[in-house]
Amino acid sequence: MTGIKDHQERDFAGYGEVPPHARWPGGARIAVNFNLNYEGGGEGSVEDGDPASESMLTDSGFPPYEGLRSPLAESIFEYGSRAGVWRLLRIFERFDVKVSVLAVVRALERNPKLASKLIAAGHEVVSHGYRWIDYHGVPEATERAHIALAVAGIERLTGQRPRGWMTGRPGPNTRRLLVEHGGFLYDRDALNDELPYWVAVGGAPHLVVPYSFETNDNRFNENSGFSTADDFFTYMKDCFDVLYEEGAERPKLMSIGLHDRLIGRPGRAGGLVRFLDYASRFEGVWFCRGIDLAEHWRRNFPPG
Image (tube, rainbow, N blue to C red; front, side):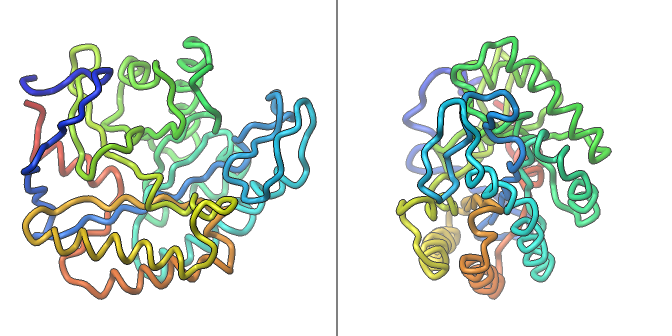
């Protein structure tokens, strides 16, 4: 595995000044990968034994209340699964774009009709963990058990084993435990590049397909960047334009993160529609799922 660094070793050089030509299918100048986070019902909740209701990415401003359920925070997550996710799936169907659905298993168990819809529509179901919680402080044995539950749950709900993984808030043991469990072609728990890359985990090669918290609707959250649908569209368009221009010589990946409870709102969803309409007008754009990226990279850029 010459040139592959251990996953725990920080790498500030990456591909360097001249990254590899990605050779996207059809000679595409840019790969655009939408990732729809499905988390409602798997988030931190007093009802499920957590110390407080989840307050991250609720765009309400309500703080967590120790030992108390927060009805409004809970209802925001419910909005995503009741209304937002269906609006977003209709939008992607309209543009015939297949996406990666980052599904928290506890959430999917609470809305099983969605699971069959995702598979029928050709979307990829990526394991987003058994619960949508921060794993930095979770005991190793518990996290190991959650990984097993997440894999078994998605296979039971969709009939297919997940081949990709994205924790969202991984801890120091997460990637090692994933490889220990086995069966994954890639994970998304990194924000450090615009191309997939290999790392070594326990001496074995493991593929990382980078994600983004920047080209992401999380910036609608509590005055953190986006106020309107136009804000989202403009930012995504500007990113797309730069990567598309650079892609004449160095094609890259544009990874876009979405949440059903955020951009699934009608006052924001128009920004996604406008971006899809804009990007679809260009030649040389590969709309792809995470598994498509992983399989392409493994074929064309094997480890070592």
